[in-house]
Image 1: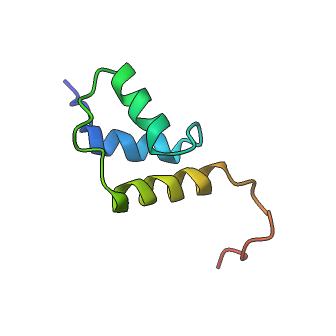
Image 2: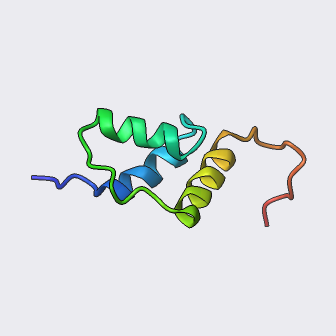
Length: 68
């Protein structure tokens, strides 16, 4: 039996998917999946999720630095 990721782990998975624009959208998706979202709060976490969402949604080769 495989275990389900925690709400926090799932939040980062959703952010990295490119399907969300920020923490609010991620919280809605978590609720829809049956997760309790009490831990998905706070300024630092919100900024981390938003940054990951932005990076996942950014087109590749959009003038950013070349990968090493």
